[in-house]
Image 1 (cartoon, rainbow, N blue to C red):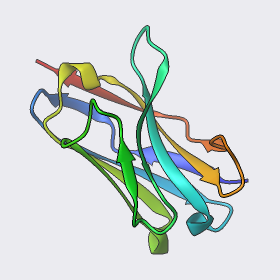
Image 2: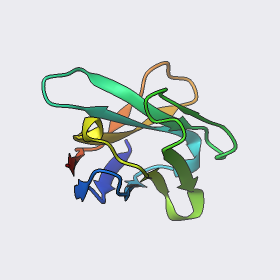
Image 3: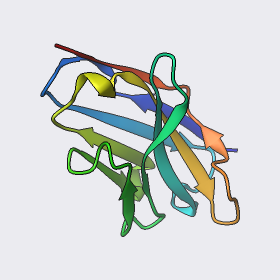
Image 4: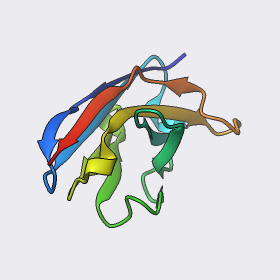
Length: 119
């Protein structure tokens, strides 16, 4: 089992920045690909970004490319999502998730952290 806890959500004005953190415990953090997802009010959960186990490869949803950056520090068992130039449409609950090498789905999820972007 891997336990994931997100930190860093809050209220920010459009154009501002936030940095989300996701701290893992329970198993070796570097074994897992990490991802960030979000669920906006009235919408389905959607993919935001992912990073491979070493941190050498990342991928992003088109809606956040150039504005968000995913990273990880395996020594600290933590993944990050730096969010810049935030837009009203970025308002959502953000979740981090971990996926093992042999899994096609994300196996473990955090409880989520609310990000609200105001005008």
